[in-house]
Length: 146
Image (cartoon, rainbow, N blue to C red; front, top):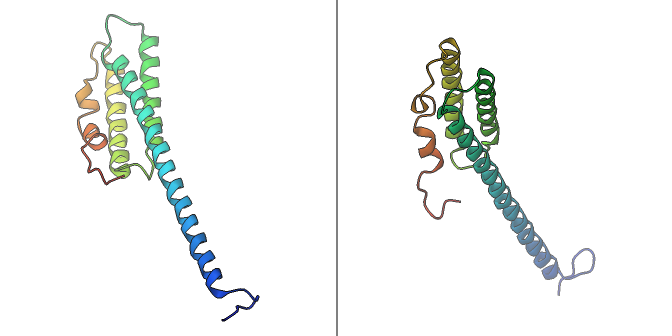
C-alpha cells in the first residue's frame, strides 16, 4: 500500500479531488443558469415597459398638451436605452437584439425630430420599430437551447 507525502492513502486524495472538482463544476453551472434566468427576466420586464410606453406614444387619443407628448417621448427614449442596457451576454441573440435596438433608437431620433418639426404628423409604429425585433426576441427555439 502506497502512502502519499503526508502519510495518507493516495486513492482517498484523488477521490477528494474528483469530488471537489465535481462540486465546483456543479456550482459554476448553477450560477450560470441563475444568471441567465435573471438577465432574461430583466430583459423581459424592460421589453414589456417599452411596449407599454410605446402604446402611449404611438396611439395617442385626442389632443394632448405638448408637455405631455414630450414627457411620453422622453420616457419612450429612456425605456429604449434601458432595454439596450439590459441586452447582455447570456441572453439568446444578444448581439443581434442589441444591434436592432440601436437601429430603433436611430429611427426614433429621426422620427421624433420630424414630429417636433411638424406637430400634426405622428410617427408610424412600423416605421420606427419594425418587425425584426419581435422575430429576434420571440422566435421559436429548440427545447435543448437554454
